[in-house]
Length: 173
Image (tube, rainbow, N blue to C red):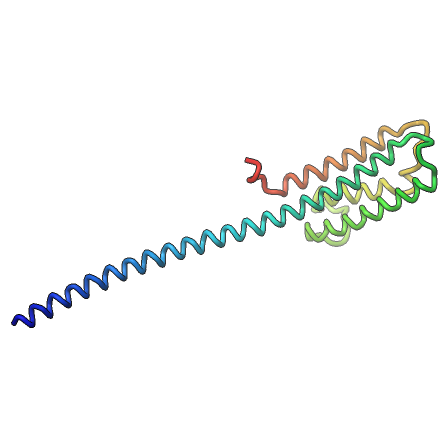
């Protein structure tokens, strides 16, 4: 009888210990799941942040090229000769073409950029490349082309606006 009582006590203690261990294991498992969820969220945010960073860097290169175009267009007569102007215009136009194609990778757009579903940044870069055509974008003369410069700047603002709309602003807050 004494042995039965000790057996009952030992079994009860083991059962209680098993329940406590199971609850602790369940709690640890839940904490591990929460940590895994947080880790996944952090990974997704890191991927998004990297994509935003690359888009911003691309936008900075576009803006640098566009600023060089504006600077080239606002030169006064005599500050640059025709050959240098043509060479610089061609270099900047080639850079714009490369940036436009790189942008097509970002925005997953291929083919014609005149469509209505073309992202505004790509459309503006496409229009910038058209504005830099040799028949339109010529050596500065005495009559400063204010409309041409305004048009260049309008395209630049379209690029900035589109990129700002696409990049997350959670880091600004």
